Structures are given as C-alpha cells and as structure tokens.
Image (cartoon, rainbow over all chains, first blue to last red; front, side, top):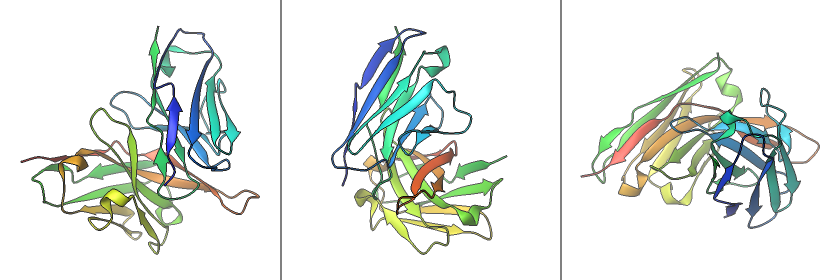
Length: 107
Length: 126
C-alpha cells in the first residue's frame, strides 16, 4: 500500500502570508494526487486534483505542483477562511490513501 | 443542486451490524464511481471502499475486507455500506463521496472525490 506523509503536521501563519504544505508518497504516483480542505464540523472540500488542476470555484490563490513522489500545495496570500486542515490523497492505486493532515492555524 | 445525504449510523455493540445509506440527487448517479470515507474522532481521513458505476467492481481497505460490503442501486440513486462484525476502531463519521474522473492523455484517468455528504456517525461501544 502507498503511504502518504504530509509536512508539517501543523503550521501557524498570518493573514497575507504565503504558505506551502508538502506531501510525499512512499512510491511514485505520477500526478495522481488530490488536495482537500476540511473545516471543523464540515465535510472535506476538493481543492486541487491531478496534482495541479484547480477545482471549479476554488480561489486562484491555491495552487498545486509536483509529480512522482513529492507534491506541494501553496496558498499565495492567506485569507481568514483558509485556516483549516488540509489533506493530500493519492488516486494512483487502490487502496486510496490520505496524508495525516496539516492543520493551518492563525498566528 | 448536487447533493449526497447519508443515514443509518448509530450506537452499536462490538460485533454488531449497521447498514449505512447515501441518497444522491442532482446528478446522473449511474455515471459515477462512489466512495465511502471515514474519519475517527479527532483523526484524519481514511478511504474505506469504492464501487464502479455499474457495481461490477468493488474495492476495500484491508482493515474492513470481509466485514464491510459496498453496494449501489442506480434505479434508486442510492449507495449503501453494510458494516458487520463492528469493532471499537470502526467508530467514526462515515462520508459518502462522488468520484469524478478526468480522462487525460495518460492511460489512467484522474479520479477525485468532488462531492461529499455531511456524514453519518457510527459508534461502536458496549
């Protein structure tokens, strides 16, 4: 099974900051990598699919990159509504697997 | 409006069973793979199972294989997860999710979960 490891597990930042979260796969997954945002008490929301494709309706301050084993999601200028937990997920092969999550908190 | 609504969760003793349901609306249900994903209290997301558009292929995470069964009724726009032999570690919020597909130049399409329900809670405790 493919293991997904995110770093950091938590992050403090301020409104307006540029933030990058990393996700590493235990083996190559090409670009079969998705990113989700989850706010407390809410279902996850798809932000980016296929490593770098922005889901419809998601603000352009979110971007994704990477291929193979190393991936990132970047928020170019943090907004108050961006403070949440972010998960990566591989869709290269089943069982699909998620990273453990990165909690983005207000500094 | 595209919507998924889960139901069927509850409190059950270890070894017990439940049948989780997910009602889909606002899209052509029969054209999508569907997934169940769970989240234990205070923990991350865990993919549980997938089912193909016509129900001909099903996949499970190892920890539930042989105990959980995913199924669908395309005539009723309904997805189900039969959960048997429940254990304390199965306690979680269970989400159903629509799996969309983008067919690109590569041999394998991109799959991603683009619509989620609000979840139904399963608590396994004596």
